[in-house]
Amino acid sequence: MKGYLIAATTLLLGYFAAVPTTSAEVPELDMQREPDVHSYARLQEISTSHLDLNVTVDFAKKQVQGHATYTLVRNGEAEAVYLDTRELTILRAEALVDERWQVTPHKLGLPHQVLGRELRIEVPETATKVRVHYHSAPTATGLQWLTPQQTAGKQQPFMFSQSQAIHARSWIPIQDTPAVRLTYDATVRTPKEVIAVMSANNELEPERNGEFKFSMPQPIPPYLIAIAVGDLQSKSISDQVAVFAESYIVERAANEFSDTPAMIETTEAMYGPYRWERYDLLVLPPSFPFGGMENPRLSFITPTIISGDRTLINLIAHELAHSWSGNLVTNASWRDLWINEGFTSYVENRIMEALFGERRANMELALGYQDLMADMNDLSAADTVLNIELGQRDPDDVFSQVPYVKGQLLLVYLEKKFGRELFDEFLRNYFRDFAFKSIDTAMLKSYIQRELLEQYPDVVSMAKLNEWIHEPGLPEDAPQPESDAFAQVEMQQKRWLKGGQLNTAEWTTHEWLHFINGLPLDISTANMARLDREFDLTQSQNSEIAHAWLKLAIQKNYEPARKRLRNYLLSIGRNKLVGPLYRELAKTETGLKWAREVFAEARAGYHPLTQSQTEQILQLD
Image: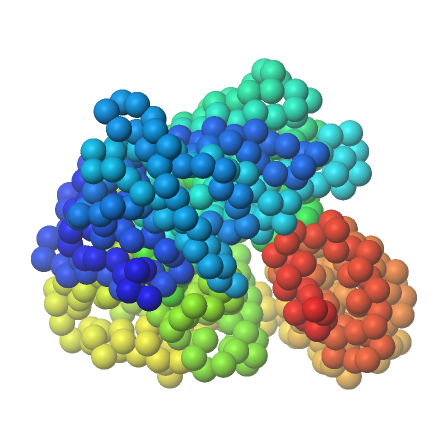
């Protein structure tokens, strides 16, 4: 597969030169990167530095149609540019030669189950741009189309994208690798009853005239190109932050996320300036498969974190933290995912500590550690390595707690070894030195060695760093986060199981999750019913608490929760919440049968990613 190989220094010079950044080049580092085996792009020959996207959103056909125009950067001798596609219909390709567009030959390669199809476009020697006319398929994995009945307002349809990890290629022909960084402009046509928003500049109250224009002046990797179209309203939180959402939830969301401006100020004070101008939030329908997606300037957010008490807004801190880790400094391939998510999880927890105190930050860190331990029990040893040998498996397969929490714990470990003040300075320099660049694990290790290990010898060895990154599981001396608040919950739990009462007046979502998840699996049906009577857990409107309770209800075959479980699975499509419930149901023959019946009804309202993952859990073809 030598066609996928990314050349080293010539490639980096080719597209780093197009990046408008004030940060200095990082000297004395080996800038040669490992290849991204999940892209057909031959970046050592031609890369792309700017996209002009011009599309129509057609709800009747469930497709986007139009053309994508790329500015070419020649990094070597080449007769063609190579793009990634998945289920796209390519109508024709053109090249801009001497300021005139001319049709140029193109060819689609054979389909690959994970990668899609290579698109080869011939480019004359003097061509400066190429344009691809195309339309997407109704089954595009990067788009979800909702009927009016599947929205809260019931009047207008809704469409949104999810391009991470390699789903941008399903709605745009593109060099779909995070090794590429490009700016973009877009013109989007829609029905006049709805508005379009993108991961770019967004008007807060655009005219509903059926045409919207966008610009993203900062260079981003393709997986951060995002679009949503629906009957959206906006509500400002500050001069820099606003919420977009359907009208039923926009006020609640603005109230829930009111700490976002303070989060920005806090992160800037710790790790340097916010580089993206605005930071807006889009609350998507409940079918959104993730908690959030860090699309720059417009993070996509699940409504399931709107609890009314702001106890789940660490997710907002996480998506904001990506503005430094992930969006500003990006993993060069998906085997380096921990560079995005481990650093982001660390920064997220630091934001929460600065704004809400150590007690809350420790609870969230401890819950993450518990989730990591649970994941590691189910994963193969090879999948508990940070710099994972992914091969050509679907990159979505590596989105476990390992890159998030194990990566976070590595940074916690380094902070404890070098001291917080010194480590914060290291991170500020890291975000400055690699701003608007994509790096891999080898480059990061070289930077850590130069800036920390060699500067402060005999604190952490390269052998220890390699153990964290390249060995399975956790090192013996890894941090084991604990929470005093959880210790108090456990004491109350023991008393309650002996017939005592619970004092939950001051409990947050975190204490409830620890309490429910820590209940013994041999808890009696009588005690399940007692808990339900006292705290109405079956009907909890906090999606995280309801999830934990319903999972326990499945394990205990607690019949009073069955109706609520059905409604929960029918109304929420977030993988983190529905996947474990389906997995628990699939452990018994009767549960599997019932889960398949519910899924058959719920499937149309799920995102394609949730559909495919649930089909695997339920062993459906």
